[in-house]
Length: 354
Ligand SMILES: Nc1ncnc2c1ncn2[C@@H]1O[C@H](COP(=O)(O)OP(=O)(O)OP(=O)(O)O)[C@@H](O)[C@H]1O
Ligand SMILES: [Mg+2]
Image (cartoon, rainbow, N blue to C red; front, side, top):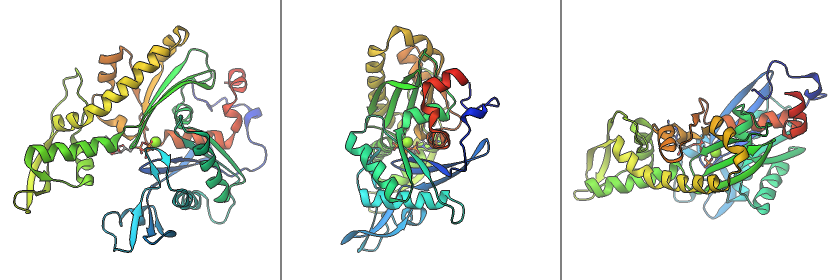
């Protein structure tokens, strides 16, 4: 059931022109969704900000331009990620990132009245307030902060208004949100502070142990995306890819091979933590919601694209899940739906209308 399907009633259309944006401030990527008729204009920038080393509030570049400086900056410039494990760590830099996101999202000089920002579901009141403040300081009149899990469920078109329950597993770069939703609200949430970044770090370590060769974190990430998988009972093809690292023996470049099994080994501690989190969620899950969760669970986030995830979850939890075909943008889309019509969050309206 799509939230705003063809039968979207007159009553939930925004009155007057409200320019709104949905923004997913991610650890790695910031995604901006702007409602445009029945669809969205989508933009993505790396969550990276370049600042002066001795004056971190002096922002020199944001997004793509700043990413190019990561690890390659002159001594007096540092390129940093303002979010760590999904949480805003450096307020001034997160502010710069959001201002850039809003600039990108608005056409010409138009004013953005309302933005909705997705943040991790277990964020503290202080973290929530920080997101709200940077939104206001970036120039939006109205700032709503909602859980990324709820935004993902709305963006993925899950039947969140129903009383049967539905589950979202959002495996990002820095963290994984496990969210149970029923009657339009979050009934349970567990945040596991592990994600794709940890897989990359583990892979660097595994390569070092196996070959005595040091590879860059970006090389590890690319290899992971190219050949990666999770360990599972599925009979998945093993691929391999060649990369260049630095030999610790000779200090010379050395060609080595990374295969799917090595990535699965690197991903194992991460998926184990996610399964532990799911175990807790399932322990607490009301029997009333089991049927809905069994029938309507979806995985989103960039790291949900590693092969074997559905099988591994089924192996461990006997619960089928669907991998979103749009894993990197559903949070921003869900936020944009709420930004266009905040009453999308109101369960009574959804129950009556959709
Ligand atoms: N095809 C792919 N296969 C496996 N992993 C992928 C793929 N594409 C992207 N990733 C990984 O997904 C992660 C980024 O996902 P996403 O954009 O959802 O994270 P984020 O929203 O920035 O982070 P968070 O939600 O933790 O704040 C990175 O770790 C990236 O390496
Ligand atoms: Mg995310």
